[in-house]
Length: 125
Image 1 (cartoon, helix red, strand yellow):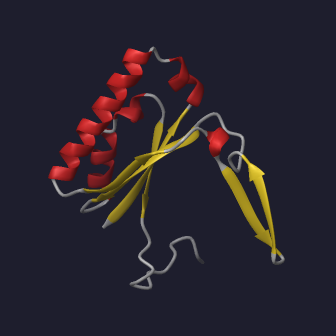
Image 2: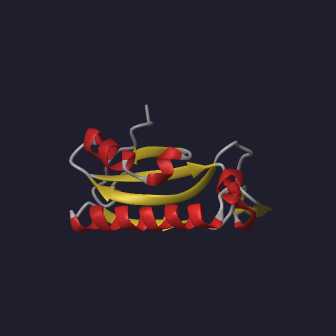
Image 3: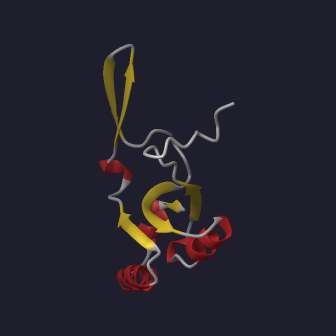
């Protein structure tokens, strides 16, 4: 089963890291990506540009509106994602707990809904 691990961090904490610590965090993250890629469990992983580069869009009644920045003001911002293959939620949590960014922020682990297989949306009543 596929799981998306959303990496949330406080950007101000990343910006405050000395250059050497930031580079070490990047290197550790890439090394962990390589480790889970070799196990066949990493499908994709990417860091995101800062929230200042984000654009949020909405379409209401056929009209498009855009806003600079993220959808909501929060303490932590979405900093990246890791798409993994795991046998179950416990396995996905085990993999996500190894992400170095988990020490600085939080990781949201969410099952991917397979639209090709017409999986029902779990939130639907």
